[in-house]
Length: 210
Image (cartoon, rainbow, N blue to C red; front, side, top):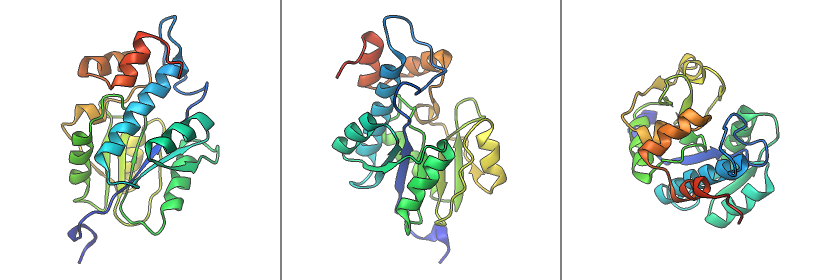
């Protein structure tokens, strides 16, 4: 039996930076606060993941105490970020999941994400030992998967091509809610056009204070 002949048993890793430096490129108009908007985006994304995955299969990796608190309370497993950048965070979470073989990494900046689109994306990725779903612009990565028990993350500028070079099959899926990541004001405007989650909508209406 090959890797892709067996049914997938996914674990989902979601890195969330959190804190005052989260989404540093995202400009929001006063009186809104960037950290509050960034947190709301992450919370909507993680909530969609928790609704779309079996219990105990979502792993949030973070170094921020506030993120640890709300992610754990929501039902995610939380892994400490070693503070070496995004790739080191993903590697730490991946190591914590050994001996799991079917692992997906989804960036936590997808405010439009729905459980249905997450499920469709994982179903498409299940056909390949390694797969990558690029962001809507085609350059970055929103979803990275392995069914081999091995993963070498290469997030950063040009990550979709970098992951392809490592053997991940590029899947240009018609899943705009999963592929719309938010790093700047233009991306946020596109996300608003698609429809964002409730916490993001609230944060853009007024600062989140809870």
